[in-house]
Length: 282
Image (cartoon, rainbow, N blue to C red; front, side, top):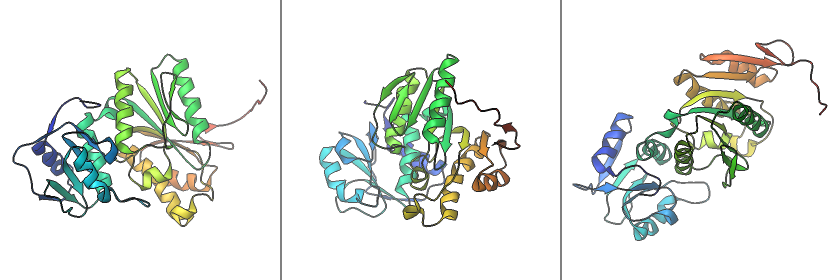
């Protein structure tokens, strides 16, 4: 079973959705069935797969359901009923359901590691790289996920997006877990937060760098952009984690006031962590 630790049966899926308070309708529900994997890309579907139909900005996964069925999908997660006479679970938000079911299929790998999320307009890659290198220098087994792919204990791999799809992410996390990784440092983009690509992950710490006038074609205005970034810290609060926030940034100061988790502010002026005596020489 590629990427998964065990077969998942239909009743487990239904029970897991109930446990997470997800409302759903069953269509052509099977009496008894087991599934080997979950995918959001029809090209990766194999026999006995669950295929999640996600409506994107350019493509609609529902349009690829027939291809997924041809490739072996035996259960569809949909937001609208598909014509083929195949078991389907109809939900409101298939992106979130993909994230929830990924936890079931991959046995929730981030609950077994320390996950550090880095968000902000600028500086994510630099901060994530520095934290990763610091952890490695302390002989900590470390994973890194970012703009240029991902790393496992210093070995580099390529990925297509700054924050991969939630299924791809769980495959990476499982690979890291098998390599006995203790800490994962991860760049978290605003698009990933808005599109639920990181929904349900267990963040133990988060860093906010800054917010500048970018990506407004997607977020429309700075307020919506900021609120999307702040979602990461709601997750950290839920997991009793710690937040490190740049309060020299206007939105960082707002975030620091809002959140109720353990937090440290960082500043070139006055803060819990003050940046002073900078030396740029090598």
